[in-house]
Image (cartoon, rainbow, N blue to C red):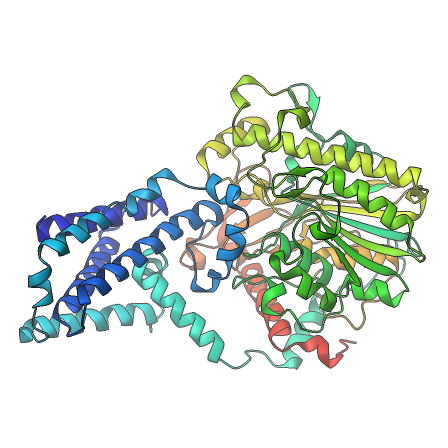
Length: 606
């Protein structure tokens, strides 16, 4: 095993890596930079005076290889490489091993196969490697320093070059070192906005309520049940597969006493389900850094649970998995929940996937609701439709086409149908318990279930919906607000997202938001829709009533993409500069509200 073979392995490793993270044009400059850095690492360890430098080098090499592996895994799911700020997710990932295994890309393991060869090389030349002198030729030292300075300058990008930004967004070393630099800078930096600026943005975003707001106080005094539907996408609603309704019970709800929002989008961060509920309950955006329940666990909030408590409601949350998952057990009291019923508190009589089945959870919930001695607000999170969509044959009720059997698409449809059946049973049980007529039921999807970045999924869903499966469909989740005996039957096409849930439900329930800092709008009374995205599409991306705008990977506006919702027809990105800046401003404002814990100061925007 010669040094030339090692160099060839380095080059092959980087080419595989860049192919897996979809650097479509294998730009030679990126490969050259990567090879130069590998060379720097090799020379540093060869010429330094560290003891046991051979073992240390092999450890560093292995760790960097594992980071590459993690990058490709992360990119496969999130369309982004992993950040140092996402190291917290390791525990959450290991808690759902089936889901983790299902996202593995076999080709990613090629990034690890060279480690034994590198080990063999150093074992063969161990004595020579260990005996390398710390000081070498003056020219080599100068070259080492120059390359190091050049790479650090690229990472800093002092002249804001678009070309350098493009390289930094894709090259392995510069992107990760830059990420570490940004993380440290964010921690040390002072607040970027003062209170007056924040309140001005909030006031501009807060819509002036019409004299007679539509659906105002229609649910006032009624119980409220909010159901967050795991991995539920909108394309299954009112759709038929192989002559069968996929969601017959939700379809039935939509036809009577229901407001249905069909351009409602998931605006989650890397916390996925936890971010969806935080954003829905508080009308603030999540962060790319991690889930809010961990980062700002003990902040002061005044979201939906607190608002309902002020009206005398009993507030409880229900989920069929472990209470500590996503730090819910610790964070929920600060969110305003008086009780949290988790897997540990329920009969574990039917386990599907990672926890108690939706049907079992709902059946156990109804008696609890019936026992309440006051009006209640119950926040319920379903679970059975969780990736990787494992459902025993005895629970399956859809007749799949032969080509969809044993596929992710077919499995997804089966678990979606199961959750829909659970909702149907829940409605029936509420009626039997005498609770239905006096209960508003809101349901929405938390995030996508089928990733359009995965080729097999893209092909199946594209064939089903009759057009190219893209982010406008992937991020579109359903939202329904069912008000029994209201005689409402409306589908609202205004674009919105989980950021808009609080003001929308607050209008219906007659809640006062004057002393709450929120960034969404009441979709039932809004005409211009807007929602910014946090992950899957990079920050600065957004949806309005007409288009999805996707900021370029390197963050350069002119290199971005925009297309009309539902058509895949490309739009001119240059006309969306103001909305792009609005998306960035809203995300920045939301972060500052959390960083400065402004709700603790009892600030009114009036």
